[in-house]
Length: 545
Image (cartoon, rainbow, N blue to C red; front, top):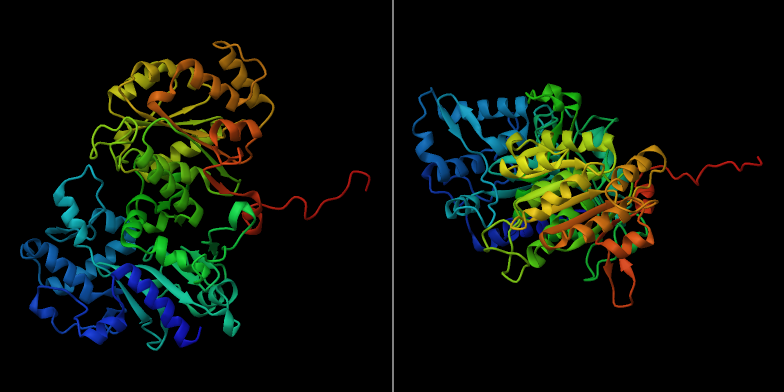
């Protein structure tokens, strides 16, 4: 990308995240660091790219500014040799061992002291102190970041930091000079970025982005030529395929990156509620070995996953309890992760207005429990493992196979309860009996697209209790809703890949023309074009042939 366009991207991202740009600060002469400690007076905006430490990949000025501003009393209690030397060294070792996300969420022990490295974004139900702490986080960007010990002249277009610790790297490309993110940006990361450099090691950053004015791609693990990039694009309107729509405001198609994603609150949300390490089979164990050597991959949300959870939470906070939502997400959408993230967000959502149905107070959580219902036993295990792997606390998660199990889970204060559709009819009475409680019910597969044994077992189970022979799963759920009168204290979030007309009418939203649409769409066409599922029509042989 030529310098002018590169600086345009950098300035737009910096303005969104920091509030001012480097150029604005240079014009006004404002110090880049707002720090109380006098020994930081030497760190000015005039030397942005030279202030990071290549050995540890930290922005030292921001790191010490954050720590001395927020935890000087704790630093004063340090009994070791030299805190300025020991803290970066031990902090770097902790990130190598546990990964950046663990250090941000849990802080780090430096000999006899424990320092907090990030203050999470509070909910309306949290204390005033937590809200004040959150404001003290220092988000920053460094342009043309040097990062290599062996080749000091190498630069990355931009690095985004929080409290001096790197979160994202960026390489910008310009189609007008015949360079694109899809080809040249990915090629640069694969061929010109050594994954052994500290900044680029697996687990040191959350994601590496390459973008141009049309598209965005990212990876969570640089592995030279084997690096796998995923699209971080919005998709075309009405499920018409991959890519990004024309910007209605006339700007870049990728403006959503700084308008919707690279905002302080969103980045803070990603840190605390989305990113997790996948340890493969190890994640099902009670004691997960939280060390980087066992991590298989770092799970980071694709745009449609971040978008659907965000839009659902915004709508719920405004509308309240009792609404139904249809989420049409194709195979290859990462539905299990989307359901996991949504469940954890729903247990903390508070109303933004007292007009929200069944709202208690503006700082009281809307839902007492989230119940995840699936019609596939294999997926039930997968979602259960995902919930546990995210593992904020095992104390809030339970598995219910009977009404008794559900009753006990509610009494024990379990916030996320997992069950299968085969067991769901037996716990419906319990849900309606506790009418003072509000429930969010997440249903995987709004109808049973699988025929055969699984569908038959669903019908047989529910037919013991209801006269609905021949019904598929979504019809059975609809009958359960009506017969059990659950809608008054429940919201329903139905995930499906292939909704039928009846499913759309039951769970979808009606427009002014009387047509029904899903609340959110990630289409099969988009999944095929993005390479997450195969197009079965691209290579086929007729029966006669």
